Length: 526
Image 1 (cartoon, rainbow, N blue to C red):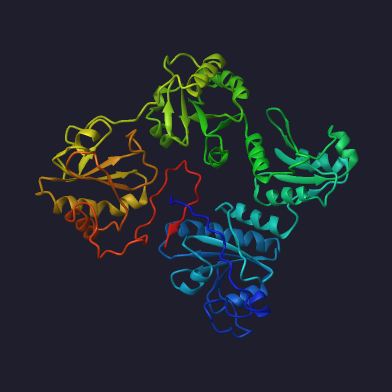
Image 2: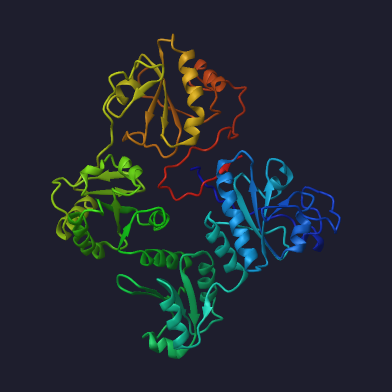
């Protein structure tokens, strides 16, 4: 998926009260639309343009607007969920409406609202055109609807008595209650602001002394109640510094997760958003009783490393082949442990491969954290015909030999098999190799970076293109321009740089896609 850049909203000049209520032209200077104009709809979504945006802002107090491009794959994936969210809100008679703008067709609007990638969603409130809120919520229907609900009404339930508090706690697996002696305090505003975006938790707040007493509290505290592990976690409010939203967010995210989390499509976003860089993975086959028994010892070791190491179980019998591939494992190698730091992407394996027990898991974690185990690098075997095709096949074991051959100029595509951008440019890469097949000093090659790791060249996005010029010095040039035959050819013919007439400083190719375990939201650059 593509890299996400959350840009701050553009602070436009206030052009009078008419603009404030969406009645006048924005910076683009479009004429005011007729007041009785009907706004077209598609699948319950308002279709907006420069002509009718002002009318939409006047008619709808709250409006979520998606800027999309017809060619954008991520926009196409979002479209059905966006329509479902509109239907959910309509069924509740919610006042919020969902809308969309064709970005390429409405260039003035994309410029006005600083849209630089697709899809981009912005939330407009009270007809204000100049300060839309950037949408940072989920990309599925229920999440979109819940994000809007928490902006339309209170994000936390006011609790007055023990019965109400207990009902709230009993109703969900994870409930967060803010106990504040003064509900007008700034800390309460911080708490409610966080509750707007923590959509997978239910929030309440109270100032009632009897509830402080019931839950054993004497000072302002945020308490997370959960139906697993310790059952409760307290976050006292600092009396001098107040409530820090970032610290509270991290605390809630960490304690709302099970000590041991099973990896699947529902839990993976929380796993990678937890801001815990070290992950310990136990690969097991959940259909086998001996494997299931290992979960006990694995779980017993987890409390010692809470906040430092995230304990994750990966079922090799489920749809987790991509995880196995990422660690260079096969299903039949389970049960086994792997440790990874997701910032450095360094991977570690136990030295002895012994049984998985609470003691062995603890020892392994301490060994990795103490720097006593070296990371391992993935590499496939060198194919016998690696140099027989026009595009040469590189793996970890022959990369150095080929890339740093001082007699060759080597142009390498680092790719991922699942990457759509890689697939899109595959034909151009083949034609490029055909074009230069008779140039003995030029090699066009590719390397599957999901199956082959290079310590000196970590790859974080796909495709990544690097040029290794002939000669001493192990020089490396990263290619960042248009991914087509003509530009590739100019780059090669000019010795690893583009001629001066090429425009500089403008992103002409989509950003590389990031791996599936990234926390970034998918977007495509203009």
